[in-house]
Length: 631
Image (cartoon, rainbow, N blue to C red):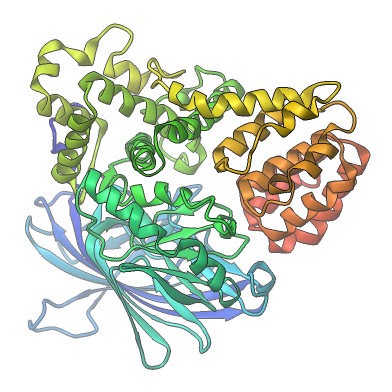
């Protein structure tokens, strides 16, 4: 829908002539042996035809070869004549793309505009990529199996038949029956346990299919605020409560002050088993996060700010297609850093943003700046899996573009007011960049007058459609007051003879996580350090070398490997045994494989011991690094 005015993309982009008003899922979950299981499901779709005869007498839904449909039927109108079981319809699964299939359902006749239809589909699922079954050893408690779904970007079509596009939003409800001794939770505004270990959920706000999520496991909860609780396996719940008590509400209140009301009711966090391969997933009302956030000292609490920011940008105002993912992530990075500035101050936020910019630099150096994925508006060819286009660009280049818009306005409180108006204008809708930028120029007519969308070198069109480094970079110099001491301290530790007096004069006890991270990144860049220096550094700063904080542990392990400090190899092994997050696991295997004989032996030994507790994708990536098998 490019080129149309604001609000043009509100109509669904790829449900054809249909809009989905409500989805109800009736699910029965059963666990099988060793990390497998089945979902028996019935999906009821309440549809409205938006235009006459378009699409003929056929409805097409997204599905997956792992989703076996046994029956599709048209239900009679409520209170009308007809068989309550409905009229069975011909249904056929046809090949679509590597990541799914198309479900073609033949209707009795071509529908008319405004006509309401209720369709039920009986199916079984369980093997697909969106439904993950963990064996007990992949959990923290190691006693019971566990199941979770991960929908972003196009995986929920293997969980239930749907319009699996962010352009279609709908409310949903679900009834989930699970085995005794297990609890079910979903990304829903209400949750209720009924008899027979059956759980009932309702999501009263319209959301896209990728945000529907389910977990079934041995989990319990604890309140940490007036509208927040933490969920975790029993062995983690005390740590989770201690880490997040009172923290979430503070972030939510600042978010509301900046971006308008928090519309989702609750904001709960679910600590996933250690094998969860991602940092966090912003499922509404129930963010899924890695247990790596349980640092023991609240030092990673700000990671949750990113997921909270999605409550406005991504979940409330959503990119209409995955080719414009920056609308979700660039605005969320900007929102995250606005909240962080209010809570922690500008220098700290600039330091955090500088680590983000460094990641973007690494990514662009690795791919080449002119790679087509380094555009904000990515052309995703038919059949290409949107997940394969995932990288740092929509996050950090997107952040730079939103910062550029703020720079054009030139006044922070005016730009904050614009963001509130933007959220209010497009809430519960799926939009394109043209909608966003059209609204920006409409909101600031004086900027439109000046032609800010076509300033040479900074054209909006160039931002969207030209790959490469952002034409504008926000000023991060306030971060220098935290970076400079870290840089100077790293210089001292890299010297041939250590000036202990100067080193001891620097007190790192008051440094926050990202200042320590920045210091370790400098040490890593200067590694290997002169003989014996890392050993002394380890002894001098137990706050770093014995840290439970995953960001610090990752970097300390990288330093241990780069400096071949065999005495601390056990720390690398312990860290890899404790979690399976992709972002931490893969760099360490790369470092071991690129290191000494002893480091390579450590890689092989650690992988053979931990492989069963890793997500299958992460297992494959590690095998590729270690040359064990073609991934």
